Length: 562
Image (cartoon, rainbow, N blue to C red; front, side):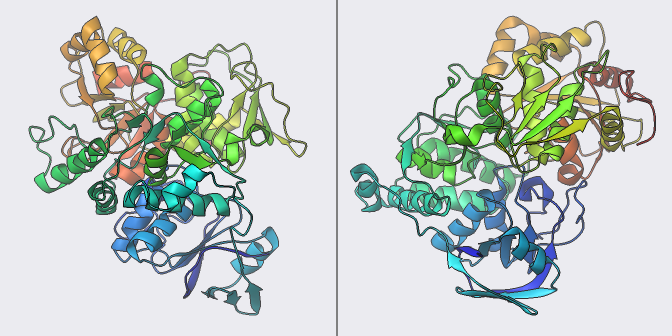
């Protein structure tokens, strides 16, 4: 039966998305236009439409971007999903509960979804969905029992202040829509909502801070949108810089640690296997579940703070062992001579092959990937899949778990890698910018790039920039790696990441970007308006020195046309 998740009475034309969409990075935050260069509906707009998609995908920041679209008058009138979805649902819930903006959210069965997708427009009330000859009664989500402890109820009763009360109300509402039987404790939180993707992020954070919000569990922070200490000297426009820094400051005021990294697993004391945590930032969630064996769903922006204020989250999704099993097996062979570009490409392809379910990747048992290879794999996977984790047979800690009974099989072959290489290399050969650190570079990656640049310098017409966390910057400063990189002409920038960078820190004159990140190769065309070249770290070093991207794919990729 059709389920009403967030109520609103709306009507409008239907926009049917053939595949899931990351609203952050895939949608213009002021107009609602789809800007994801890889999405079938690129150029269409969410604004004023009843938008249908199987589920969302990609960044946890989508909830905040949706709120920003509501503030800008460019939001969809409703979102209709076929699968479970939390990120945009949470954004719509916050828009209604805290700020009075209506965006209906529904979930339909496959048959209902297919029938509606053939219509041109629809009307939604709090009891029915009407479209052409289709008329569906709506059942309100969250009718099942949710067991709350006395401590949970104390939050709802306002005993810990207004901000914590609102936070628990949001947690409980979402838990009921997810069918959770109870809430569970978490040991730590990672905040993703500190990226200034629109004024809505600052409005939310400032509102909660002004209500006296304070975190109750150790809380780290994602990369932000400026180099907090140096943005003024970097020429960042004052209005943007002040707002972006003010957003970060609001979370620090609420008790979060100013770690400012999108790779919290690189910090000291990473989570342990089996530990219940609450992380936002898609690449970090996937790495925590897949590589570390910790447990966290892909928490949406705003939910991350709500959990930090209460220490509680819904006992649902991959917090439960039964939901961590693979539902798709992907067979792939390690190509002879494959370089480090293999792993982000594999992640992107695996996400495309398993856009709505956890996969088990087989065939790489003897490949011995590094932690940085797995970081690149997880980050790229998160751009094309909504799943919060993956398994790699013989490598990740839970890969021996039996797949679900309904698991099916797909295969990735040489033609898939050839196609993706061409898709990631649409730009001309002349490179203006080498962009490294999406997710943030590790100390090992910094050292490797310094070795590749030894005895050479960045070409005069090229900018080479590494983004990283403050902890990594301190480590490479102590080891001498930072001095080696700087001597070669490489710029090192802490706090922000390529997915949150803006001009003039992003060199305005750069037209073609070279990166080794599958995540950034996917998002960069939409976020920056530039074309992209992609390759292994050694190829990025070559491009930094010569200003030219490789003319042909590496030897391990078939040199045919896609």
